Image (cartoon, rainbow over all chains, first blue to last red; front, side, top):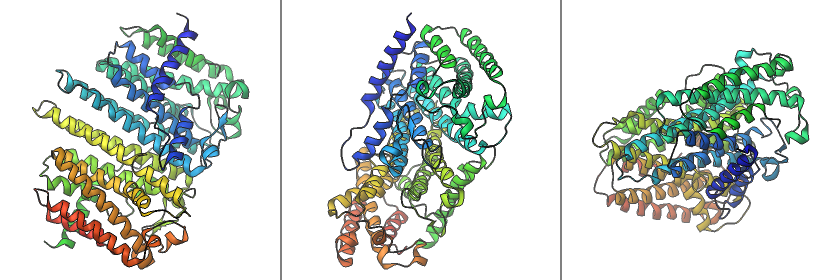
Length: 304
Length: 304
C-alpha cells in the first residue's frame, strides 16, 4: 500500500462528502452561511471523519449512507470549536491554516453566530441519518438504536464533560504550574473526546459489539493524548512555515505543556509509551485495516 | 380555572423538572457549569417548555419521561441564544431579567463557552430520551421514530434556517428600512421557530397525526409572530421596571420594528389579526386544553 497516495485519495473522498452537505450560500442570511463554509473549507486534515470512516471499514460496516451524516457532523463540531477558540476573548488568533480566521474575515458577531450555526447544523445533519433508514426492514429497530446511540455519544463527547470541558481547563490552566495528571485530563477532554467519538461512532454504526467499542474507545483516547503531546513538541521544534501557524505560541501564551513539564526527550518518550499501548490495543482487535494502522502512526509521529 | 394560580403551578412544575437536569457544579471546569446554571436559573418565564408540555397534554400524551428531556433542551437552547446575543460583539447588553448578563458576571470567554455548553447539553439531554424507552415493547419502533423526528425538528428550528438565521437577519437589518414582509420573516425565524419546535415536539411525542402537527406548526408560528410584535409595542409603551430591561432600546439600537413601520394603533391591529387567525386554528382542533388557550392569549396580550 502506498500510504501517501491512499491518504490523498481518502482526503478527496471526505472533502467530496463534506461538500455535498454544506449549506447553500443564499437568502437573507447568506453572509452567515458564507462564514460557516469559509471555515469548513479552510483545508483541514479531516482527521476525525477519516478516523470514523476507517473504523467503520475496520468493522466491515456496509451502510455508508448512515455514516456520512456523522462524518460531516464531527468535522462541523471540530470546525466550530476552532472558530470560537480563535475569538479575541479566547485565543485571539488572526491566522489558522495560513488563512485569516473567521472573525478577522467576517467580524466577531458573525464568527460567534457561524460557530453556533455549525454546532447546530452538526446535530441536524447527524439527526438526518434516521430518515435514510428503511423503516420496514427487519433490522430497522437495531439500526435506529445504533443511530440514537451514536447521536448521544456525539453530544456527550462534544460537551461539557468532553471537548468543551477541555477548552475551559485550557483557559483555567494558563500561567499555572500543573501536574502531568491534570495535563493528561485536559488533553483527553480537549482532543481525546472527539477522537473517541469519531472512532466509537464508526464502530457503533458498523455494528461492533460492546467489548469492541470499549477497546476502540481506549485506543482513540490514547491517539488523542499522543497527538496532543506531539503538538506540544512541534510547537517547540517546528517552524511557522511548516505548521501554518506561529510556533512557540504555547510559551508566549503561558500555557502548560509536556515540554514545559519535562525535557524534550522525556516528552518524546511519553509519546512512545502511549503509542506502544495504542499499537497493542489495535493488534488485539480481530479485524485489520492497514490504512487505519498507518494513519494512527502518522497522527502520532507527524511533523506538522 | 384560576389561570394565574395554574400558571404559577406550571412554572413551579417546570422549574423543578429543569433543576433535575442542571449539571453539578464541581470538578476542574466548575466555573463553566456555574456560568451555565447562572443563566438557566435567571428567572425565565419558561414559555417554550410550557407550550411543549401543554401541547403534549392537549393531545393526551402519556409518557412524560420522554417529554421532559425535550422540555429541558428547548429551554437550554433559548437560554444559550440569550447568553450569546448579550455579548459585546452582538447586542452588548449588561442586564437581563434584572440581573447582570453572563459575560458581565463571568467574563466574555466563559460566556461564549457557557453558551456552547448549553447548546451541546441541550442536544445531549434530548438524546437521552431514547435510553428511557422500553426497547422490548411492541410499540418501541414507533416511539423511536417519534424521538428521532423530534431531534431533527429541534436542531432544524434552532439552526441557520430557524432561530440563528433570524438572529443574523436581526443584525443585518440594523439601520435599514425594511418591509413588513421582511420583518415578518425575521420574527418567524427569530422567535417563531422555537415556538414551533416547542409545540410540534409536544404534539409529535404525544402521538398526534401529521395533519394535527401541521395545524400546530401554523398556530405556533402565529403565536411567535404576535408575541414579537407585542414586544415591539411594549418597548415603546412599557417602563424599565415593569419589563426588567431598558425600554426604547429598539429605537436606540436603530432596529426596524412594527412600531417604526406603522403607528401604534396599526401595530395593535396587526396583533389582533394574527391573534384571531391563531384562535380559529386552535378552535378547529379536535381536542381542548383550557390552560393552553389562556396561555396563548396571555402571550399575545402580555404587559411584560
